[in-house]
Length: 331
Ligand SMILES: NC(=O)CC[C@H](N)C(=O)O
Image (cartoon, rainbow, N blue to C red; front, side):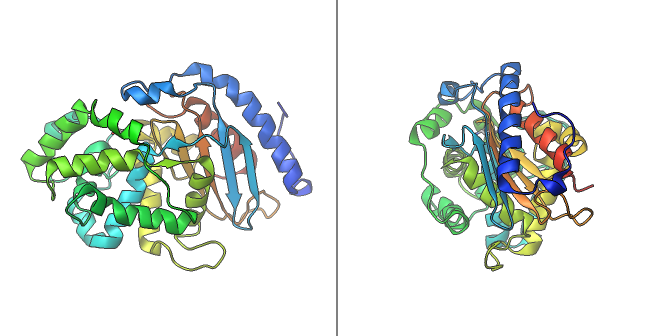
């Protein structure tokens, strides 16, 4: 691997950056053996644990792609960012924050224990399953397809194409979803849900099964880095206030119960999913103009081999390396 911190000011051309990133991906691919692919949703077991890919897109359009970038995967928990944004846009920020809290749990994403033990007035945050299922119940619409529509519309506006649903993954999750059903019944009993439980769960499983690529994640990340505006036209896609709240939640709750470590060692808002995806948002930095992607960038990572928290093991290490090399931390 290329060692040490380079003097980036002399190397801001794309070829140089590409060579570095290729080198880092080659190195961190070996780290995939430190984890394993998710198996609690049977279809996710089919993923190749050796895969590792990354796309970085800067505000000026510079795009670096490296490793396994052409493999589609399901968005899983990263959909929680989209559903929360859409719910805020449809129902209003105040309405949503009155009903879903914005505090990290320190528990696993699918924990049910904290809901009962702490007798919460509202689910802790929209990025744990309990909060995400509650958010999904608040999306307008009577059927799962109606509820999904504004999510698809937002994705289409950001990506320039309408992503599709991976039906095999959807059915696999639907048929193995005992824990999410348990969470759902608990939410029903406590009165948090605003739609029929079965419709809500069907919508939630479908939103998790939307198929995307690292390029898509990088593009969404870039729009968030740009406070919700299209980086080319500066037209608003997501209201600035909503984009900011989403980023705050990504930083505090986006990497499950490893969010504190991620904020400490990488230092940018991010969200992961159990299929191995990570979306990371690097806002513009002003301190040193010689750094790559000084005006901000979005990053998409795919590496299905997960650590014990459910985050891409090599993906996190790769992001940590890039963040330290390019000084991406927001702190
Ligand atoms: N962490 C995740 O990506 C979890 C998403 C998954 N569909 C679940 O609900 O269990």
